[in-house]
Image (cartoon, rainbow, N blue to C red):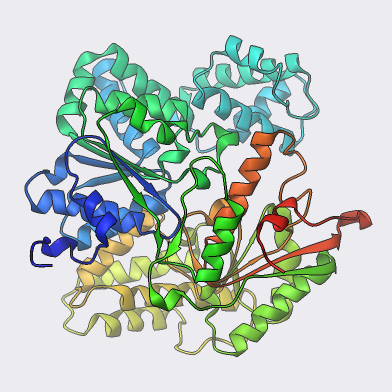
Length: 561
């Protein structure tokens, strides 16, 4: 390994090949658990360390604040802290806010954090009796229209083959969407899709804007490229211009946002767009035991663009075969899952290493009840942001205050003293509910001390906490995770339970076209590949109102007993 740069010696051959391809177009087809984040962060860091890149001229783009925060942390640890790692929306909003006074004059319009309020007021003005669920569906339609770059007239034509939100005629839907836009314009407001559209418009109509941004950013890396929408792709093309230093990373088998406008075609056709591009396939899975890898491969056999995963280490060759179980009804299924988790925790498995993944949010209630009945801590992913909790805000504020004072004590001692002042103890409380949730939150902050690099100062730790707070890069709680499969993407656990693998749930009942069913197949693939050591699938014979169910058609593809 003497000829391999020190920074890249921990990578496998294909990862290293990708990391050393610093110039020209590069597509990394990276299967689940193959180390794509490790690969792209080492590639960027190697580019900076070798002098091929200036850190300030690199833009790394992804789709969630959590993923962007993780990129920043890893890049900082690798010595490339000056790189801009952001979501598409964050990067566009920053540019829009900067250039608006120069191009338009005055300050940029205010950003709507959600569409619900304006849509509700628009419905009132039009005297439309629309419930909250229908308004959410209308909001999704607005987003779909914009990310697909359709004019209102083009969207109206698309409605011929597109399902409409319930309770509204086509004319009412169009009027409601039009009224939403009018209210927004009158109040000088923009939504998240407008941010991308307006930034793209500036690039197309103001050459000096395009020139300045392209001068600032010379090298682009895009993670999760299979999730790019037409609007995001158009903006990325505007950012890149005629440059060729573009690296994209993705996995067609993890395309699970087609309903929101994402298209894996940009990933699969990258070689057509850039005929001289370098193509690297990452198929060595470092995450899951061999039986889980085999199950994932069986599910995606013969699917377009699917990668063939293989265990990367000898340690992965063993492991238990994933199980499929059936319960009498939803309640029994939830109880069975909770019982199995209780046994695991009793045997020494940490709650944070266990997740229950499901198709719909409504499935969470029975699982929450069953876990709470057994005194098992759990967190519902997406139910509330960690850094918005009162106790967490208090803790971050107290730690930052302590950092302003010269402290010679070890980081662990100082932070533990601060958290103890807020009621934290080394042993968990016997009470459940709010008391346990408070302790779990403070313990998660304490765990960040253990994860911090050696010799981290209190000031550096405090700055990292502030950055995590600003980007919502949340720590891991010592609790079982309950999450929809969509929100679990990009995460992993030792043990994963997937209830509800039945017709009507997975695939969902409204997946009526072959394309929609295949998206459901990819959802199950994502759920399966979150597991490292153990995987348990289940379904119930009866659902709500005693309706009978049958097992998911996907189960027959898994080669499981």
